[in-house]
Image 1 (cartoon, rainbow, N blue to C red):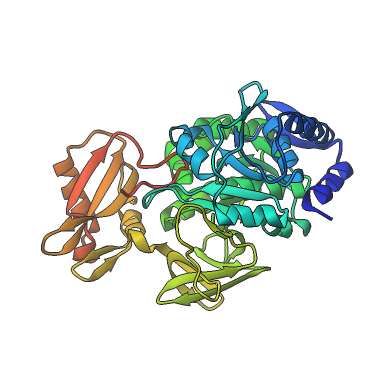
Image 2: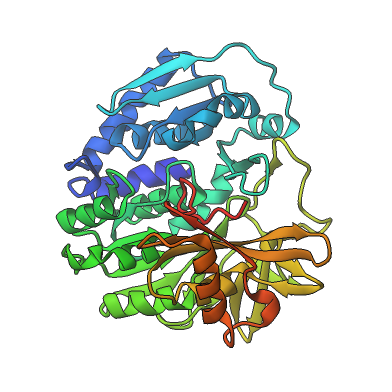
Length: 448
C-alpha cells in the first residue's frame, strides 16, 4: 500500500479529530481529506502530471498540507518553499526544474501557475520519474555557501512513519521548507496528532499560541529557547501544557539547557539529530539535563572517523541537483559534525567548518559562547574565526547586550570573565556589540 493510501486510511480512523489549527480555526481529518480530494481535481485540471516538479509557496495551512498530500498521491516532486526565503525563489525554481508552482495566500486560497518551459535534464530527477516515485526537493540554508538542492525519494523518507508513535498537539516552529518542519508535519499526521501552525516565530507570538491552543510539543532551536528564557516571556504566559520540548539544528549550550529544565520542571527535553540529506534520526537523550544523545534507529548506521560523525541510511537523499555526490563508495555520508563518542552516546561538539584554528589549536565556537553567555547582561553571542597573518585565525565574538556598552569596554569585560575559564588562545581578541541577535530566518546562529 502506498504511503498516501495508508495515511488516508489513518485519517478515516480519526475523522472528527483536529488535524490542523491555523489562524485559530481547527480543520479536522475529515475536512483535510475532503480538501485533499479537491486539490487532486484542481491540480489535474491545471495540467499537473505524474513526475512534474511542483513548488508550493506557503506555511502549514490546511490548503498547503492537503495540496502536498495530493502531489504525493500524483507522484510529483514536491518543492516546499517558505515565504521567508522569497529572495532566493527564482534560483530555486530553476534548480528544482519547476513545471508548476502553487502559491497559497493568507486566506488559504491557492493559485496554480504553469512555469515557463525549461529543460528537464538532471539524471537524478529522470531516475525518480522512471521509477514512478514521488520526490522531495529541499534547499539547505547556504550557511557555508550556495544553498544545495537536495533530492529525496519520498517513499523511503516516509516509510518510518508507519510505526505508531506518541500523539501530540504540536507547534510547527520549524519552517515549511525545512527537513525538521517536514518531519514534524508527517510525524504528527501519521499519529493523528494536531498540527498547530505558528502565527509568527517571535518569542511572544510562539508563547501566545502555546497558551491559547494548549500545545504539548515544541520542536525548536537552542537559540530560540535561550531568547525565550532571557526575555522572561515564559513567566508571562501559561505554558504548562508543554509535555515535550525537542531541540536541534545547532549545539545546545549547557547553561541554556540548565535554565530550560529549571523553567519547565514538568516538561521532558529531547535532543534531536537530523540532516536535510538524511532525514531525522531516532534519538534518545541520556537525561533531560544531559547533552549526550543516542542516535540511529531503524534504517540508520552510525560511526565516527577522525572525530567526525558518519551515517549510512536507507532514507538518504538520491543526491544534490547542483553539487557532486557527498557519499563515499560504501554509501557513508560525512555529516561534518565533530563528536565525542561516550559508550552508546554522542556529544555533538559543532560543525567542522565552524572550528577555529588558532596557531594549530582547535577552538569550538559553542564552547566559547557558553562561557560568554554566563555573563550578566548578555542576551546572545556568536563566535567565529577571523584570518590572522601570524596565528592563522583568531577568535572574534559578536554580542547582543541588554544595555549599550562600548565595544572596547565589552572586550575587556569578556576577557576578564573568560580568564581562568578558557585557555588563553580561546579568548576573543575582537568583540563587536550588536543591536540584534545573530540568527537567520531558521533561528540558527550566523557565523559568517
